[in-house]
Amino acid sequence: AQKITQTQPGMFVQEKEAVTLDCTYDTSDPSYGLFWYKQPSSGEMIFLIYQGSYDQQNATEGRYSLNFQKARKSANLVISASQLGDSAMYFCAMREGGKVTGANSKLTFGKGITLSVRP
Amino acid sequence: NAGVTQTPKFQVLKTGQSMTLQCAQDMNHNSMYWYRQDPGMGLRLIYYSASEGTTDKGEVPNGYNVSRLNKREFSLRLESAAPSQTSVYFCASRMVAGARPPDIQYFGAGTRLSVL
Image: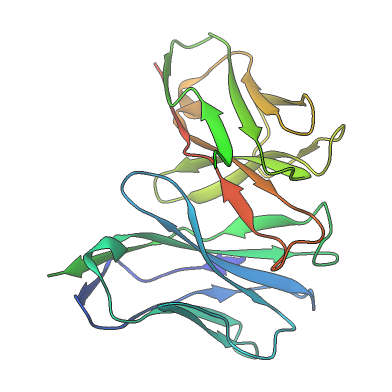
């Protein structure tokens, strides 16, 4: 079974509007972390936002926020006021196993969602 | 701020050739990782090094070897390249303890490898 599921087909959003990118995860570990990365057409992987499983509040970083619904095992990325530069592929990833700072913890990535921002 | 540096950026190999992908980080991170990215597959972990002197297999280690040369450098070697190893390879590093928030992996720019 996939640990990280990103099932949306290519997403389109109008410039200046908000968009939600879906991510569901599967783990039995009570301690885990969820991440979103952006990959523009240039290819680099850019860290956007992090949510720990014990964090009481949803994470926010500028225009990015994470809608964390623990019981539903979902960690959706919300991008507010979309910009043309937001056009990219977005990956959800999960770290599970051991303590948060455990050296052997690893990331599992979803297959990604392509977002296109229309002017 | 160099961060994570990968070399080369592009490489074309013939089947059976060998090569080493180099990765170096200047952030004093403890853990380092090698991933491959294939279309529609996301990133898959090949090998990782939790700390200097240790290496472990990830999800797709077959056909690869790694060396953690020192704290800064982590190389990936293809001994006998196959067309199935055509991919984009990413190196990443992570501070294990003390960072806030913890766990963030920082990535290099990637190496595009084609095996003919």
